[in-house]
Image (cartoon, rainbow, N blue to C red; front, side):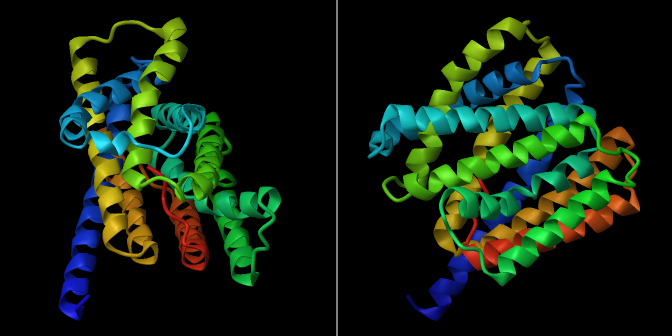
Length: 291
């Protein structure tokens, strides 16, 4: 590939990744705007449902994307992990400061490093150990003296980050046989029936305002996955992954502009440490953000 073409691909990847970060931040703001009127499991169901509706034209044009080397059960397990991760983050965004929750979400690459060492027998080098330590310190800065403290929202965000790490570890093996687009499509398709079953005990038909927000979230979430997936196909993860950190200041701005949330200095310091740790881990092991 010529240098000019490579440069154009990298530029396009960066633009797609920036778009994905903007959409991911919008997703968090939409969840907060629902203001607890819709249960997190119901949010997950409608998000997946509207996402599948958006995806139907793509599937009609490219039905071959459904061809997979993995069993339906394997895709279902990953979809279940993804569903619970989404629900944890939805609940956290609904009750905690958006900036704090988003910062804690960036602990996921650090948990991947730890999980790979404990479960897959990988031996982390000095750089990864330092990244894990920095990330832990950043989290403690946020949950310690922060005004929000070690709240339920922070616990849910940590749970979501752990589940996201579990998804990444599953993808370590599944991505060897399937294209990323195949994994994304199957995840979305299976999330609809799984989330419906889990949402039934909490189901109440959302109002018109809530339905509009849920439909918007479905479009935003699916578009975000598509943009980040395409960005990853155009440039190395070491270039694309750090751009995801743009999500944090965007979410913080959204929290301030729409919900009058203030940002504590401890949140800023902790977020910088966590993003630095995640960046070090990503560059060391090529950890990709999971959408």
